[in-house]
Image (cartoon, rainbow, N blue to C red; front, top):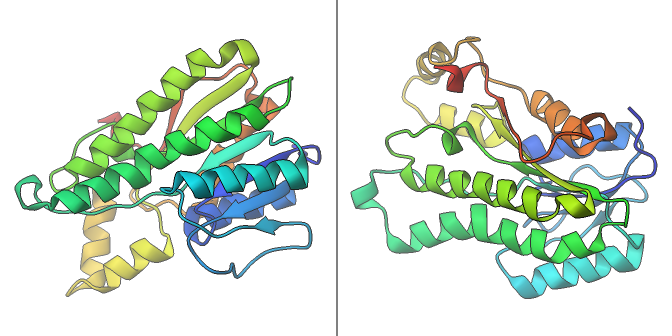
Length: 244
């Protein structure tokens, strides 16, 4: 597919899945507006616009939308890839951690959708939310993260219905465990990293972690005209984890 006429916002673009999504959009010819909390990105190209900031801050989201309108006029695609995961038993989680997880995964997505939907052109556009397999199934120690990602799924479904008349499609990609720098670093902190990796892989029907590029392929598909009749959908890209 070629996306030369597309202007795409990618959040959480600093590394891992966000970086892979950005790279895939570049290959397809899209113009990119990128954001993350990092001061600068390691990989950009002439024409990319990078604006760092905190998507939990509505004033920043308003400014991001203003600068998007100023630089591109319209935004055809928004990829909501940012988020935060804090793990631990429910009864031991701090309230501040709970607020951070809900704000970073759900309420910030609401803010971006609220302020970027008006920038989409009359012919419509596409929001793709990067959720998680844990928004579909529960897991001990990840209750708040599951609640936030489950909420993101329902936010997307509701928006898909609300905006259908404007031809704004809203879908969710739900990745499984993916070999991002954050995940790889968490494995290395284990007493026996290789044994822990084998354990986690054994819990996945395809017996391996995803690579970020596999998630990016699904995101770009849902963002593109090739999925023009798909909205309100949740696409697991999880090696079969949620098929149980």
